[in-house]
Length: 541
Image 1 (cartoon, rainbow, N blue to C red):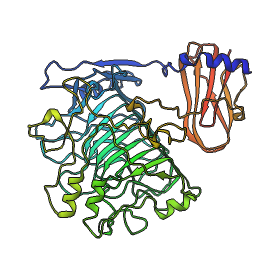
Image 2 (spheres, rainbow, N blue to C red):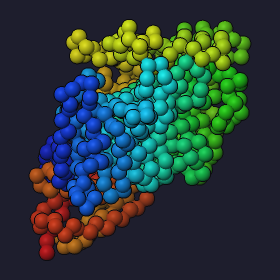
Image 3 (cartoon, rainbow, N blue to C red):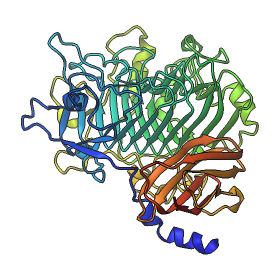
Image 4 (cartoon, rainbow, N blue to C red):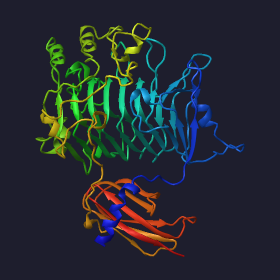
């Protein structure tokens, strides 16, 4: 058997390059007129046969890198066809190279939403300007909403910005959300104090799986993660290797309410809850300890509640602390709510404090903080929304600019990175590497799955050879993410059978062989966070 493992991993580079089943590709060309961008909603929603059925339920819509597109009506799919949109070249991930999706108002001036999905969604290497309206106007609220119970949303290498609500707003239970190497920025109400502007908003619904990795979140007014009123506990929530700064924290930072499994590791949180701890503003929505807004909160302990918070760097800069010092009722926010501490038990390794300077990022929104405490009712506070320097002197210039695009050289100045060679944070991660977002800084990321072979998984298929169906059995020593896939010998992914978070214990999965599947030899690969195994399958009559 070990000889086979060596053979299997000898072709892993080929295997990992496979795609899932046959996909139809539709390239949407950009417009030649920069004042009239191509409308992707016409193409995607109109991609049907005369009977009204979709042309192909497994279609990927590709947009030209560096081009601007629009939607004149929202993109709505159903549970039987996944909405899949990506850049034509997925390797060109600089902001200036991402295809832009924005909105065009209709005749009466109303803007459409961007995505209202009832099925699976995959977004890759896009720049989505969700809620921008006129110069100086409030941003639209909740432009990407997901309504599919049990659906899956994958967002990779995307920039999402300018939404007054949540960048990803969930409106159904049991969803699986995967976010990797993204930037979320500019969320909330402008010029005033208000409780909008969230990263991911599950509202009253419970997620099956939420994994946010290697992502930068900045210039948002409210929570990074917001749960409000969920009756059923979340199953699994993970934030790993993320960088957060310019987070104002009107109602907190990470508000979980109730969940079975929470994992917060290897993150860099700079000025979280910049608003500070003030009883005056702990007056709305969920505040479990009835005191002040805290960084991590739980409202209810359920059975089980597993909370892992470790290897995070949390600190506040001197300019922010100087504003707090002006007011007797404002202080540094506490990190843990009472129930978070109770669930963790030992909080020793939860976080450390090392002040770092990021290479090149927008200015701290300290002026907004000062304006708030000077006059909470003001309607002309500093604009936390940071615009590109290319807009200097235009109607959209409100004094908060940064060179994101790098019009001159195509590079841009945005670098939310730090000196990993001369800091504690450079070796403070759970794997001994740097904390914070990695890919955007040119650092190597680690797989969510453990690469080592683990025979304790007891992975096997029966019967084998297979004619019409087989049972895959395996054992998990601990809870974690699990992926069970079938490959052919060319390295193509034929079918993904399991892609989920599972508790520890014994599992059996019955695979019914697709009728059109050719006879021959295949590989079944089980990937988990404790290790992996593979086995050869013979498909016969």
